[in-house]
Image 1 (cartoon, helix red, strand yellow):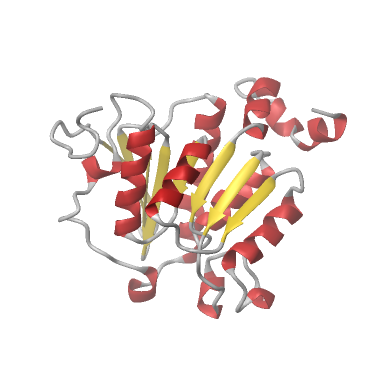
Image 2 (spheres, rainbow, N blue to C red; image 1 turned 30 degrees about the vertical axis):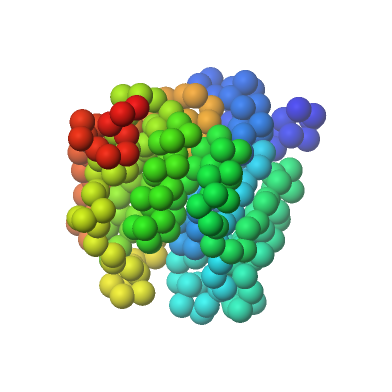
Length: 248
């Protein structure tokens, strides 16, 4: 790492828990982010600015004016552009040292499996339960850590599923496919800063897992209510009958 990079990441390197060794791990890591919207914005921006070496962004939408209230990777001039193109421009402007790889389409299962295989960490930032269940299944199969966040109205939730560890619950230990209820921001609304809060915490969890520091949210579900400014953390146990992870 040359002097310019040492200066760029100096505030990280000053942290004894992270130090030069931890920062070096970040620069050699590859993160897969599914989505390029509200949650993905702070996730991708903080991972890029923190020096994660490669970021793969997967999204097939275009920027709409209604996105701009919370999707801070995009601006007014980006309306009509592919979200991944707008995002790449923003992220490259933050840190040209991070390689931004964009995929402007919905991935078939085989393609998604290949991208998960290549990544060190996976961040789920969609509002689609079908995508979440598929991504969780692939992460369990390939033993890759998955960080999942969601926001609706004034509420957010976050957990880290250490599919790389045998004793960690998976996403389907939390929600079964029959219990899943689709709720979207377009139908129910969302307070913009709540998206930023949960997305920033997803990025925090990702950096910790990649650097191997601290205690992550594996086995815990964090809930946030902005209207009352309340945080709750619930224990999440591995379901012995889970059809996805019980055999691992």
